[in-house]
Structure formats: structure tokens, C-alpha cells
Image 1 (spheres, rainbow, N blue to C red):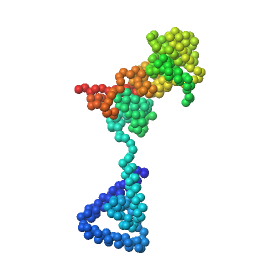
Image 2: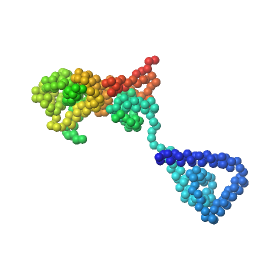
Image 3: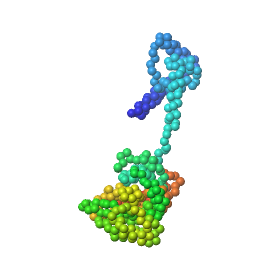
Image 4: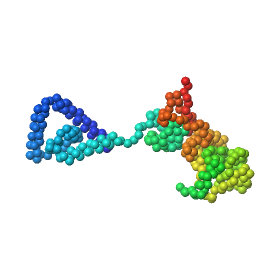
Length: 366
């Protein structure tokens, strides 16, 4: 409402100024003697009104602008009868403040229209992505460097939808990230309400998922077999983190030691001690399982394996810089941050039937 009132007032001022412009042109064509005589005549009338102490009407904004403009060409203090000198000075200062506000208006230039449309497309095609994820996608795969705040500024109006860690444990994990492997279980429910356990093994340093499988009946023997498949014989890992679930038995820990790994059990009821794996499980739920109803165990394996491939090869991770666990190519280098070359074309590959998309550059055929 305030903007509409200001816009209407501005239109009225310019309309009044345009209405008085013909009078200004006619006056510029008259002789000097005629203008002096008319000026004296008008001053006499003003003196008459001043003697009778008649209250003048309030000046319009256009009239104030004209008074400020004409005051630049003569000694205006002796000619003021309707207003006080301080009032005219105040009008001049107010006009300067409006001018300076317009001249120093904040904000950058808007990014190109095609980039704004691409951001909206990525938001609508990937309802679980945030502005940081989209900014990383644009930078790592398309070479377009925009900040998450810029992405948020062009977000569609209707978009699709702590406990403190131990400092010593956090320091340990950071210092040994490349040598750490973490594993954990999560559950999924099929269309017939069967509970399936999903076992994931991840490398903390690169955030890469080493192995993922599902079973309705997890046992220590089955779990150690999954670890053998996940960890190669020539590995450089030193530690394996897991919780105190009954599946991780003493016999399993002994077999893990035979693989050349030292077991680190998390404290009781302390999921944040295995925070990286817990976050991975939360990501798998938010980006995959929350949108799916597995028909059976086989169907669940197909879904999870496709998402794991996308997670390792196509999903940016903030902690990596941003980066991708299995980075295939370096981000393209550009002279202009927000523009593509004429021969470049953006391709979109659907993942999990269009739940996610992977974007890449292709050179147009000559």
C-alpha cells in the first residue's frame, strides 16, 4: 500500500509539471518588460493578501518543485511571501534526500533469465533439495558459480516442500577421517508391512558408500560377509565404527580384527558418536525411502542400489568443499560466471523415475 501511494503521488507530480510546461514555454518567448510588469502585478496581489491576513492554500508537490527550481536563478529570500525561507530550504533538502536515495538504491543486477528459469526447474524437479545443494550442482557440474543466498533469492514462491558432540571424539574422527569406516543398520517397510533391514558401510573421509545390502533377518554371520565384500584386501583403513546392537557380536569383532581393522564401539545411547553414518541414513530416508513403497526385498535392493550410485557419482556434498565422492571431471572454468558458451547444452538425467536429476554439459553437434 505504501508503494502504491508513493507511485500515485509521483504520477500526480509529473502530471502537474507537464501541465505547467506550456506556460513556461510561453513565458520564455515574452519580452523582458512584459515579464517584469507581470511580476510586479503578482507581487502586489500577494501584498494585498498579506495585508488582509488571508490564509493561503497548501502548496502541491509540483508547486514546491517549481519554487525550488526557480530559487536557483535569483535572490529568492526577498520574494517569499507565502512560505518562510526555512520551509523552502527544507523542501530543497527533502528533494535531495529523495534524489540520493534513488541514486544509491541497493542491490545487484539480476542474474540472466535463463539461469533463473534453470533454478526454478531444479527446485521443482527435486523437491527435497535446498538452496545449498542447488548452488553446488550449478558449480560442480555446470561451472556456474552462484551463492546459496542468490539461489534462495530466486526460489519459487510456493516451493514443494542438538545435542553437543564430545569434543575429544569429534577431534578424533576429524583427524582419522581417511582411515575410518562406519557402518549401521536402518529399517524399511514393504507394501505388505514386512520389515527389511538395510546395512550400509561408508568411508568417512570421502563420504563414499562402500557397500549397501538388505535382508529381513540380519545376523552376525551375514553382517561379517557384507563387511568382507565392502572392504578390499589392500585397504588402508584402520578403524571401524559401529554401535552396540546385538548383531555386532564379539565373534564379529574378532572377524573384523582379522580384516586388519580395529573396532570402535560407540557409547551406550550415543548415536552422535556415529554421526556420519546416522546422517547418511537420514539422507537416504529424506531423499529416497520417504518417497518409495518397496514391493518386496528385491525391489528395495534395486531402489537402494540406484540411489547409492547417484549418491557416490552425482550428489554434491557440502563437507567435501563442495565435491562429489567419486568426482569424474573437474568443474568447468568460465570467463563469465553466469553464462554458457553458445555450443554448450545442459542435459538432465532422471534418477529413480524423476525423483532426482543429474545435470551435465554437452557440446552441441557442429
